[in-house]
Length: 189
Image 1 (cartoon, rainbow, N blue to C red):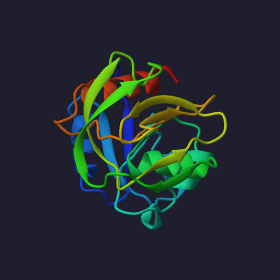
Image 2 (image 1 turned 90 degrees about the horizontal axis):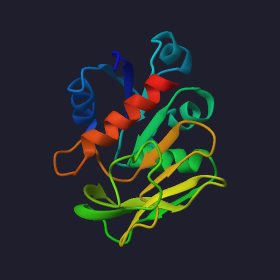
Image 3 (image 1 turned 90 degrees about the vertical axis):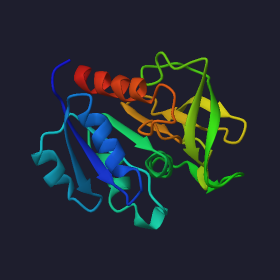
Image 4 (image 1 turned 135 degrees about the vertical axis):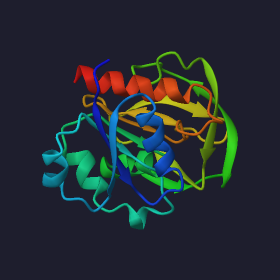
């Protein structure tokens, strides 16, 4: 795979630097940017894809809603990034049944490009303080768990994906595979 440039959008989550390191460790050019970076500045970087990090609260998601609606690049939302994608396209987010970080067994409903090689089940590290409650219209439901019905989703026509769990942490089985799948999506786009 050629070296790609992936921008990691910092939503003030505690694992943002782990996302950066995980992508860098896959021999990619990566950079953390504030979630207030203007779209024209992002495009000037000529990235191959964006990863929206997790974060503590939606009020601090900066311009993420604009990014997912207006930037024509592959986008992966992790945790809060996943929720921001859902909200940007008309989905709903609510408080999770089980808050805090925990090991969760995820059932892959549709393998798709982003979850290729992860199923049928994977043990992941997730936070469910908030979660996507209703998919945006037309979005594809990719994975679920016993504590969160919408663990993963994708846009019906654009390369925009969201996962509730954290593929960047070592506790997540096949987290590197998910990130590699995203990089392959970026390379093909």
